[in-house]
Length: 198
Ligand SMILES: [Mg+2]
Image 1 (cartoon, helix red, strand yellow):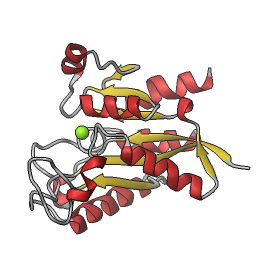
Image 2: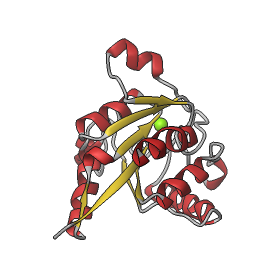
Image 3: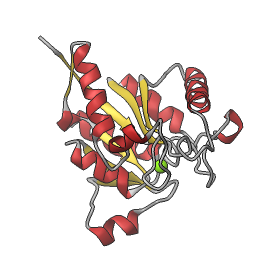
């Protein structure tokens, strides 16, 4: 018998940390968006698992290394520890269709808006006896690809106005999130938690 869990799937750059217009290669490049840590802490306190789903094509482009991406993620968990919280795991896609790479091309199908990384996370939870409740789980990001990825994975997509803020682009393409929030904190505290308790 599987335990059912709800998951907050989060884009990273532009959603949790400020999008500085370049790939995040070091801890110095990683600056939390205001109250993003509090948002993660309150979602976890409400029972959500936290999974990060991020495109990191800087790897295929030779701008960042997998080790740097992982060190930045470690740093994020160090920052979250200050709020007595953490994220469970991070899935990142190193590939980019315009930058072929012998080592990373096999991951190209994972790149958002593909739902493949979310599906992998769900499979990994299942292997641990945990069944993700899709209808009670969300995908939050700042780009249209995040909304589309959430939709394709059967999750409830939320767009945030931080980072690239692609609200207008989503409208233009008819890729409509369930909700648009000013930032991650507002998405969690102002929308998800009130609607989850209803
Ligand atoms: Mg982003």
